Amino acid sequence: MRLEGKTAIITGGAGGIGRALTRVFVREGANVLFVDINDENGRALESELGASARFLHVDISVDGAAEEIRDAAIDAFGSVNILVNNAHASRRATLADHTDDMFALSFDTGFYPTIHLMQACYEQLKECKGAVVNFASGSGLDGMPTQASYAAAKEAIRGVSRVAANEWAPDGVRVNVVCPFAATEGVRAWQEEFPEQAAASVAKIPLKRIGDPENDVAPIVVFLASDDAKYMTGQTVMADGGIIQLR
Ligand SMILES: NC(=O)c1ccc[n+]([C@@H]2O[C@H](COP(=O)([O-])OP(=O)(O)OC[C@H]3O[C@@H](n4cnc5c(N)ncnc54)[C@H](O)[C@@H]3O)[C@@H](O)[C@H]2O)c1
Image 1 (cartoon, rainbow, N blue to C red):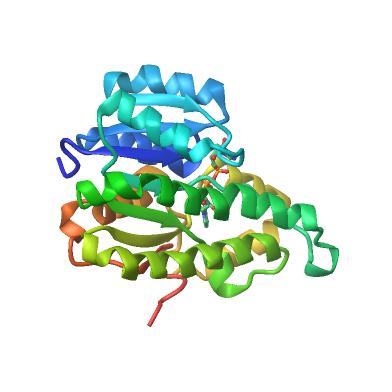
Image 2: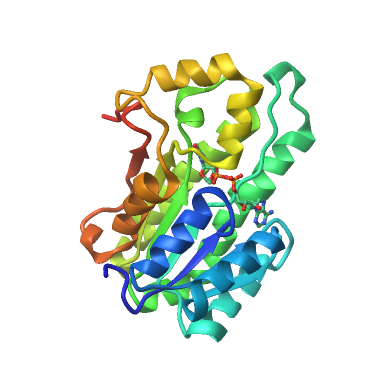
């Protein structure tokens, strides 16, 4: 087990990729404090996984959420070794139709919680030479139409992740970024709403399929969070079947 004895915080850990991460992290030996606003999913996952998983209902966009989440992880499991900033909400519209509220939603659920949780957990991460995995998106790298607020927040997360990787490397804290492409509820809704765009995206995947959250994305996140990746920091890792090949 690659995460034996580690404590992880996972935001958005009750649904989509986050739920897969919570399951696989527990399977790999971690204790997981997972945060979500979906109580039904959160409670179901908590009873499925038992004592190694603790659900916390927190809206990560509200003031003080980061400290509440860190304190809950310490209360439940004694430390914070791994921080996974996965949750992110956004709305789609062309740039011409994008409103300030749409930008606020994307930054308030994606960018600021990522920063605030990194700041809140820094001392604990430093103490145990921990790891941060932040979530970005090929939509940001590619500039996907209708995704202005989402792309902006995701690229901001990548920028800050590189700064943190450099600032925190002397402390032994690693910070990496994952850009996934996986068949979650959100992606399925997107396939239904924009079938042509979705079909075109699948056709462009070298591995010719949308990834599975548990089998394709979670192992990459486990790797980055584990000591196997001890010589990696500041990287963006594409977990997308090869669509974007960074150089
Ligand atoms: N699924 C993909 O193919 C894909 C592609 C590119 C990037 N991503 C990124 O990967 C991450 C996970 O994506 P996903 O598809 O699993 O998302 P999702 O929408 O399926 O799940 C997100 C989870 O976060 C929770 N959440 C939303 N707002 C919250 C808040 N304010 N406070 C606490 N929890 C909140 C939701 O309840 C849900 O359980 C996100 O950062 C997303 O932007 C996903």
